[in-house]
Image 1 (cartoon, rainbow, N blue to C red):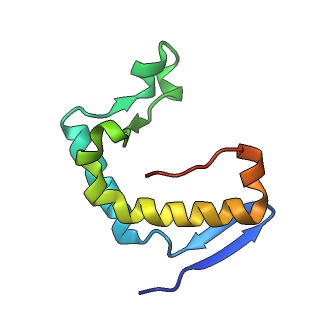
Image 2: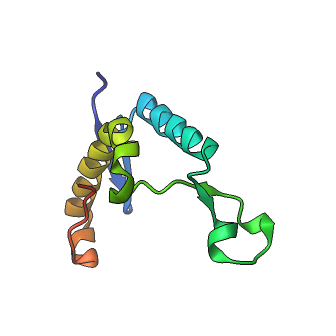
Length: 105
């Protein structure tokens, strides 16, 4: 297992090895599967009329209402993101800026 490293410079945090390529690939696979079954949405359909050139991104919302769909595939990535985020919040003053706890579970 690779060591996790952190570098925060001018409020930009780099958290190497917190989310590994395998975890990214799981997220991509999940998105592609959900997109195939029309369980994704794009900004064009959700935000109204605007140039198609500005709204071409497709999204999948991982929420508590569909936890059964995504949790097993993404839990390691979500937990590691939460660890990195909480480290960033504690070390940059972001905690005071948000004023509320931020977590995924």
